[in-house]
Image (cartoon, rainbow, N blue to C red; front, side):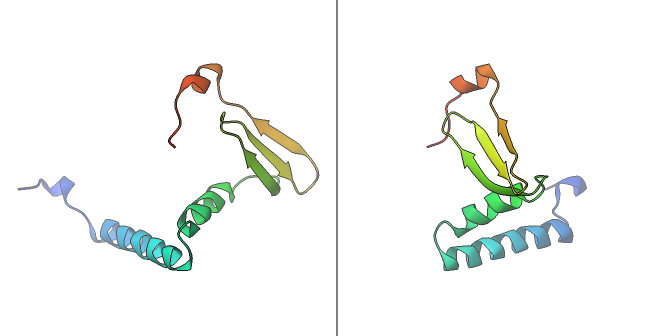
Amino acid sequence: MTRPDERETYDTQEFDFEQELNRFWANVVGPDEHLRQSILSALAAIKPEWKSVTISSDGTVTFRHANGSEQTLEPPPEASSIPTAE
């Protein structure tokens, strides 16, 4: 028996269904399409508008913005020893 606060609501069921449906259609387009869409979604809020993004295996992220500027994000020193999923 589940407590009332542990049950799924209609909204969570609808959200989960939409996520699975989006993943299904992305997989129809191509095997990596869902990953590509997820990355683009995560980058949508980057300002100023980005032109290209480079991600290195050491965790460094470099943005080249449409206005010509460049921004580099580096992981904290201790993060470089954290293994990444491969």
